[in-house]
Length: 604
Image (cartoon, rainbow, N blue to C red; front, top):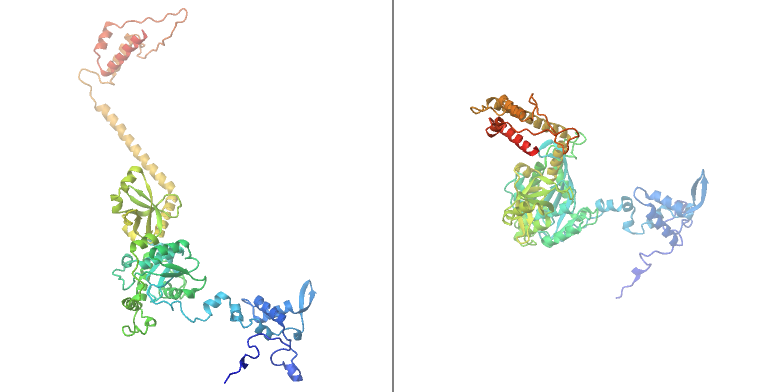
């Protein structure tokens, strides 16, 4: 038996030409038992309604308002002017569409054009109102196949590690969540703004062991069973703060992975990492002193900043351990696992089961490869005392960072320290984690990365402070020195003046004591005694070179004597004077007589 094709009759779903108003008659037509007097729409009317719908049904505007504005735009009978204002006068209701016709033909059967969706706005609809037929991890089968990353403010004001009274700001929390098990393998907590670099630092943290990092913040003996190290094939990030060509290149070189960027504002594409922020705030941030979003904010204003960075990170390490290896996750236990795992299985229990049965993408990449490609590089200088880190916020100006001097065996064996002493400072670059200044990595041509230890003697500051906080402390120190420069200069001058004054007094006392205690040799006059001076005067008088009172009378020598004058004749020294010259009575007499003899021979 052949079935008819009658179900196709009428052209279901296709618009039809209207000769009368569709639908039941209105109240007046029904009372008069007449044909419907409503307005029959043609193609032009439907186009006008569609244009009015798209133009006027928007955020904050109801369908009633949109209908009236459409009628005023397309179905005005005339324009009246009153008090200088033009007012459209609408046609009678029998000559224009009704509100119901507008509501029906405006969306034209397209769900995307529904009044609710248009009034909410596309972003609000997608985030909070659209249906969710699946999840972002439906196609994930292996550990490490996909991970989500996102940044959020810490919501806690932090203080300096050296003073509870100095506020340094709010840290940014960048989190990595593995898609298959919801395990958190890595984070980056720092004071920088979210960027491609902070996301890469979080990914590098996910691929490296965490025992040393946890021990630094006072939580020892953390194992891979609590916070694992993972290789991530795909990282899903925001199409904004994390978008950077350098980030893609680094990820490819580090572990042959890639980065996928979701549509801006579409948080649902990043799975549970968005919800992870809300849980973290509720469990940790909003319950700590100094929070900016206290649950009791209306009753009690926010408390002042109290915790420092070192204490804040320790709180989140404990919370990550709880999330990974303590909190039950029954929604992750599949039917295949139920023979070995119960409803109280944790995320790490599920993680270990998947590793045991081969549901993993491979081992983590080599740690040296991660450090080489994913840790940021900073300018530095090699000197005879080691490698000094430059301030990254000074541009080309070379200014060393407080408490950041790195030394390693390679620097000594390679002769770089000796070369720096011989030739001067050598420019260089080192790689390090801005939140862990205890170690840096130096790239070499033949030996790969070489580890350099921070050998500054302030071990406490190195362990507790970040690069951001060191720069903050350094700026504060410089500011305090500038503010007190006048007093410091005066104190330095007072010290020098007092030192010189006391030294001058001591020298004067020494000279007086030496003059009083120095005795002349037997039979001779002391060099500066009165007898020696009398001897000098007598010799000068006898030679005609001094006046009777013992003052030397200088007779200038001229090339030609004036007319009528005669040059004074030179008188030879008496025999007694000659004998005195050959056998002087004192050291000063010897000097004086020798000078006199030289003067006589020269002039005469």
